[in-house]
Length: 110
Image (cartoon, rainbow, N blue to C red):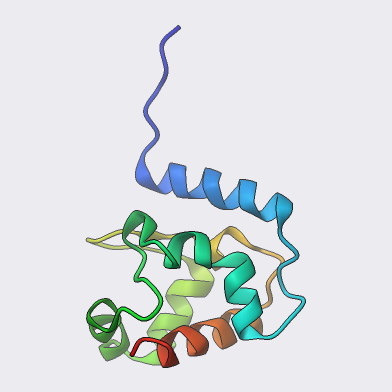
């Protein structure tokens, strides 16, 4: 049997889709929502995700402006260093919850 290699965006989608089956996203504050929904990628740098607390990874992204960060987190983004699926694959999170999570990650970059 021959297997097809998944592209990075497809792999991230598969991971996020599987994680969403087991999460209770959107039932806490921004920190707990991050821990439930985002830490799988942003905790380990999967697919180029800037890790929580990694100032060097966050600074160029923050320099683009908070509205750009929100847009990329909500709508998804494919860049030179990686991919961000829309809402990290957790479509049950509201746009306001995503913004709060982004704010949390930005404040934790130090």
